[in-house]
Length: 158
Picture 1 (cartoon, rainbow, N blue to C red):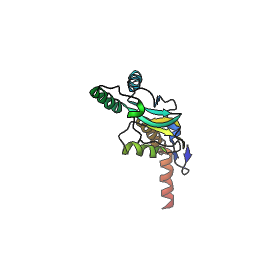
Picture 2: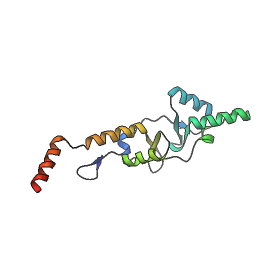
Picture 3: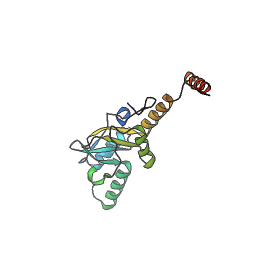
Picture 4: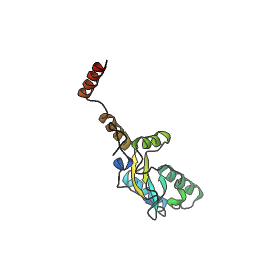
């Protein structure tokens, strides 16, 4: 946690991210990747190539690729052929409010946390951010004693 001033403590992405992340390799066959997602109950996963984040593969990508393959009567191919390459990421030093902005601006459920070389460090869900914001808000509410002190200080300064 870093302090912006003496009264506010701001959580960073690295404090709330989940470090154990299920990933798909870029060369994984789509049908095998779909089996992996179904078995784990996930709606998508980050895609890795040589330990670097290169994409995101979701149920939507899988539906599109399998439907097209069925129509064309060809195998659906690999995850790399159907994954999204344009997606949001955050740095481990992004504060929780920056991460919340990503979720407000984009219809996503999770955002990868990466370093400068795009190594995947973790992942943050909307729920993780919501819990962190709730905790941050709860921590910033003045106690009855602090409110009384403030009230007394105002009375003495008048």
